[in-house]
Image 1 (cartoon, helix red, strand yellow):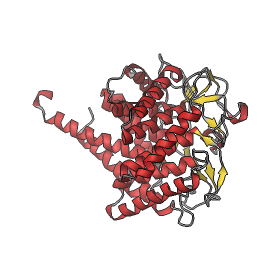
Image 2: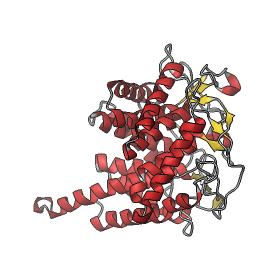
Image 3: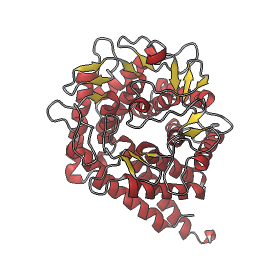
Image 4: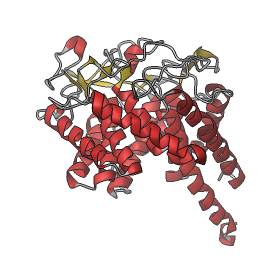
Length: 435
């Protein structure tokens, strides 16, 4: 059992990194004071670059961040954080919502004029997530109305009545994209997982049974069709009928647009350790929202956690590898920011759930790697991509996909869990029957 002082020390480090680094970094730089919304592209020195184009996913993630994390900003700046959230939500509603056909545009120019009118379900999921969280934080009825309207849009246009789950790529009019390059014939764990995440937030905001039902269906489908039930790892891509297929870089996804993009070859069972650990804790969060703490999926969740512990953790240098296969060593051994931050929550949730010491040690080692290698000590945000030993490959602190979501959320979720653990361990240590 970890010592109370160790738990509290890590919690203090994370609190400092969140309130003194990540949040001020974005609060000082990201608000577009000319056109509204957020600027997200910042180089290794924290200087802006690019044309200011705005992706729906990142605009939503920044609304979420300034809503969910505002209480952790230094008190004199909390009103500023709320204003940052409100102007971002206003930009979403006024400039990126398609008032004629419904749904949110995937991409706008800096001034808010549409640059890509497609309706990608990945982006719609984050709109639900952000607007639901904005309502929870600031009790905004318009945000909740639009979050619910986006849910209805996804159910109406993207539900796959033949095979289940959701189509993921829609054209501007809401019709399915063609197969091939526009990937209308593909489904992914990534997007279904983020729909589950969005439905969790929406249900927390509305407590409506229709949202609870959609959440249960998304959760159960992931583990029925997208996760290997014996080994616990999630597969990446599927055809419409959920047959797993080798992953390809699909346009308008992070895997296709990241600066470093390695092909993983032919196996259909490629997996992301970061996604698996994120799926682990997001599923447990969904269960908690639904009041299903003893869900029958728990045996598979344990295997999901064990798979990442066995294959995804770098025992020599620290941190979490990027990609691997179902049952074997990692294929891509560099370290990307989001997998490592999401792993913090997944590993700590594993310890909180099962009191598995291996989870806590992997969490502490990953945090040390994140703290010492990913986080820029002067500017506070995380670098994007490191080599296996922790040297910077892509030092940018922000890009069209990268805001305060993975970094800020992982620290917040870890801080909350460490706070609960430190209290529990203090109670345990004070009980003479435990000695």
